[in-house]
Length: 199
Ligand SMILES: C[S@@+](CC[C@H](N)C(=O)[O-])C[C@H]1O[C@@H](n2cnc3c(N)ncnc32)[C@H](O)[C@@H]1O
Image (cartoon, rainbow, N blue to C red; front, side):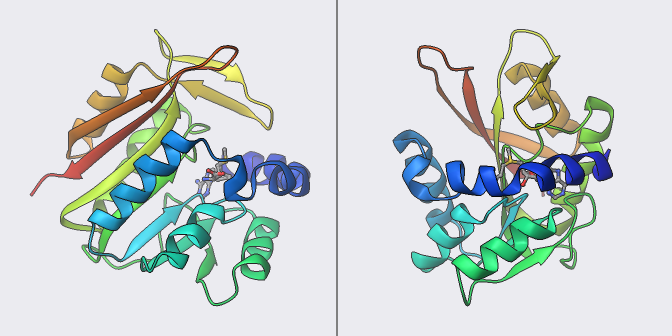
């Protein structure tokens, strides 16, 4: 799965960075949810699947101790150029570069949407591994009434019912603490789930 995602995003990295790689393209409600969550936690944080690095850069500028990680070399190069001094690493959410129990928060903002359902639990378990007791995961994703695959602009992605994704989180030793949603005409429903690793 990973090589396909890398290749698909590598092909569209420049276009993605131009269209979505700055905070001007972020919805106000998302800005509020992610920023408040990150500032509430006492770092360090990982922006896992950071893409062009706009969230990492935004949070770092607000004084959050945050590091961006992504599979795609051109995203990491773009992020380093655009946000000098902010740490960005090439890496896989399924094998994060952090020691166990050392991280206060993992932001997975639309970065687990491409995981096949059978591989999602492994990625969630990896997030749980790096989180310290009480650490939190914030997931952004597309919601749907049933678990279904759809043709995302870059590569195949999945819509998850909130209940089914919450079950996956519980299986990976997370407690769901908060959910947020926003919808709009012509948009797929967007959801965010905050989950705390069980102690
Ligand atoms: C829809 S984009 C979201 C990017 C960014 N979080 C944002 O909000 O703009 C999905 C991102 O997840 C990254 N990604 C997908 N699977 C990954 C994995 N296993 N490890 C690291 N990054 C991954 C992709 O390379 C891509 O940058």
